[in-house]
Image 1 (cartoon, rainbow, N blue to C red):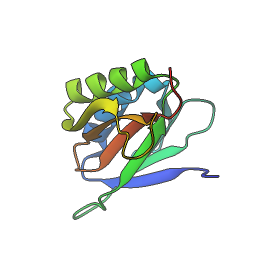
Image 2 (image 1 turned 180 degrees about the horizontal axis):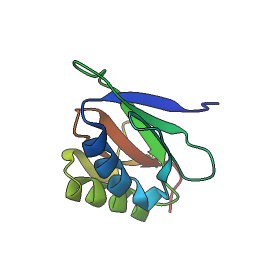
Image 3 (image 1 turned 135 degrees about the horizontal axis):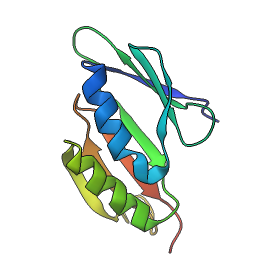
Image 4 (image 1 turned 45 degrees about the horizontal axis):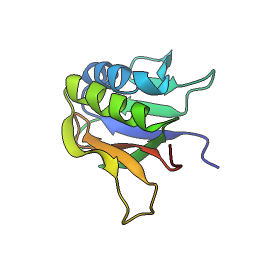
Length: 121
């Protein structure tokens, strides 16, 4: 079980704006804001943290679970509108398994952000 994940970003304000919009379809909001450290979550506890750092951030792949395929599409559209770069339109990825439906974007720092729905509709 994963408790939380954190990434380093170059510009915390730019990343807050991006993730607030991109993850809204998943119910994520900013739950804690300590200036250079910001925690988002879809409940009462932040499980996704960003910290402003110096130099090149680590490039990560982060995958969030969606409740349905429409939410995967909503995430991708929201992330693109928030300034993300496309890294894979929402759709089936049968090479992973027959019902793998995911969408991928790069965030402002080049991290690969995915939202997936594993079960069929």
